[in-house]
Amino acid sequence: MFFNKKQKLTLNLSLFTVFLNLGVAIFLSYYVFANGPLILETGAWKAPYGIILVADQLSVIMILAVNVIAISAVIFAASSVTSNMTQHYFYPLFFLLIAGVSGAFLTGDLFNLFVFFEVLLMASYGLIIIGGSKHQFRESVKYILLNLFSSILFVTTVAFLYSVTGTVNMAQLGERVAEVEQRGILTAIAILLFIVFATKGALFPLYFWLPKSYIVPAPVVSALFGALLTKVGVYSMLRVYTLIFSHKLELTHTFFIWVATITMLIGVIGALSTSNVKLIIAYNIMPAIGFMVLGIGTFSAESLAGTIYYLVHDMAIKAALFFLAGLLVWHSGTSDLNKMGGYIKTAPLMGWMFFIASLVLAGIPPFSGFIGKYLLLRGAMDEEHYWAAGVGLLSSLLILFSVIRIFIGAFWGELKEEPKEKVRRSGLAASAVLIAITIILGVGAEWFYPYIQSTADSLIDPEIYIDYVLKE
Image (cartoon, rainbow, N blue to C red; front, side, top):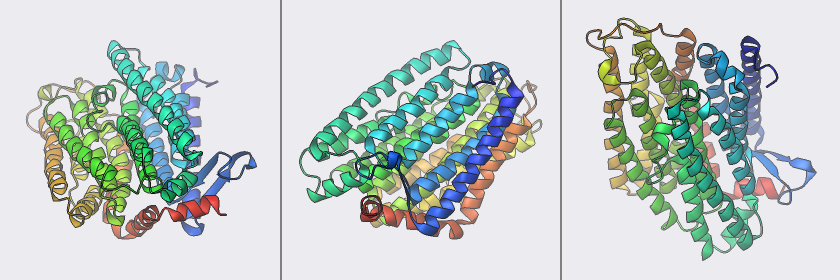
């Protein structure tokens, strides 16, 4: 904040910080998988009386993914963040966003989850408006108003839950809700919380705010939003509906499956309905969220493993695609696919990277998207949700079609117009890092999968989490 007029110094400080964060995240991940969850009791107040932070297997996987995205974003920012953006506190807001997202993944307290949601939202309000264009202002107003509504509903629902159970500690909530088998008003509270998380995650019918609000800021901000913000909503569902509200599956989780299936269809229809390159990528966030919520609704060890695998995969590939879309728009001078063509001649590396990223997104083997989708669809089939699995397969084909047409339209054929600027190397480097990670996650699935399955097994048995937090 104090060096906002010194762009190079601010960038170097940011690079140092994100690599330091990644080192801490790697060590934390190693420690947790080797020794079990790590509990931090703030102010030395024992759970459930004080605020606690819990680094369990799911949390550290998410923290590790967040810090990889953060490094890629700072690399991309090296050539894309202008001095004007730096002076308007892009980097402090960026780190505030990372802090809010990380806090949401680590908190063991439902009210603190709300607090960290507000931290990341405050940062996003600043990031979405940097640049000051008319389009940004219009979409940011819509984005802020809807998030204010969901925040009011969130804190009200937490108050209801506290009045019924007498606690907001997640482990103690899991214990007390299990004692009464989620009877009466608790199921209603579970549905209200789902509405909050569905708004944050852009599930049907609360998705309308997302596509345009995610394309109006700078590409690096769009990538951060697409990779991180909706995933906090999915993580919250994964945590709350495995640890606390997992006793009325026939009602709550069946509802999740229906919503997830409709969200997949709406998302791919939106992606097919536009010729705006950025909008195509933004709409493709929705079917991915639908796949993940399908895994939560199916509620088996295999489907939850699929959700976690797909969640990590989608964070990386969405950021890469938003980076590549931003590079393509800068190179061509337009976001209209109909005005592009032939850029494989002027930017071959970017073109082939976009092609590989498209295959990864659609779930073509052997990439990471295939592993996650295979686990999710097999889990749905095993639980006899055949119609949801069928919609998932159809949406995968349509996702592939929606992004491949960018590759064909923008890079193939004759050159329609001369490029407006050269492709930025740091942007390609940031995209390459993330695409390489998705390839490694796919090809090396045999090595990564046991850790993911172990995490899913711990989610299926909430007593593991409760014992660590309350009975140490």
